[in-house]
Length: 297
Image 1 (cartoon, one colour):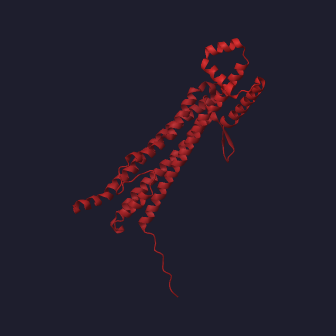
Image 2 (cartoon, rainbow, N blue to C red):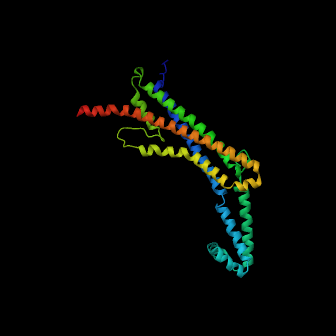
Image 3 (cartoon, rainbow, N blue to C red):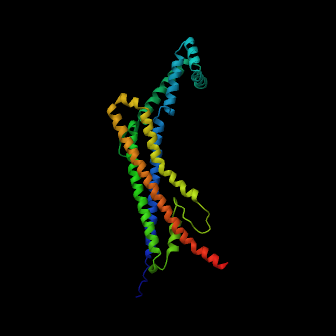
């Protein structure tokens, strides 16, 4: 019987490259989760504010009903006090109102009831899928702050692991016993990068695009700060409903905002260190090419 030829084992450097690539992909996945969470939380805030589309539709419909119930003298006085609002009411009435004013009032009344039900069930309450948990929109600063803190801790650990794996892999690739596999290692790692743009041969300066992904790091702190400022601005409403809950939300939201700011800064520092590692290794990777060209001249 012929012996089956044994499959060649993976080189040690290739295993290091795969581990480093996996850590880079993990950081990219966490960043995607962070972006999606920022969009969801900001959307919930945007739809719940006083000037949102739903609240504006309810407000204009209520003003139209109020306007239709006035006599001519009161309408004229209102037109003098707020001409822009009365002009919008008349335009809405001309475009959407039918010939039968009573029927139009009934339709408008039903429209207001439907919007108020939508606002109470879909906007004022945040429904968490799968778990069946319902959270009040006033707790958005608390919920969002906790979510961002956990994600940023996860992201920081991912960046730290990527930095250590990257440094260790390059060190191993340069050892003499590995027959100086640094060029192959560098190319394999560089081809798998998305958020980092390593220096490669025949490549122009990519400093601008290298810094663009770092703008995404500040999304959580921007969203959390926006929600917190809005809560402070509208504190009277929360205080009238529940002073205790208002204080708890303010304290926890501000505490999470501080933690998010600290974690964001740490993630930014780690990302800069990763870029610095790529820049230093990139110079040593491209240096032999420059020496060869100089020698040929």
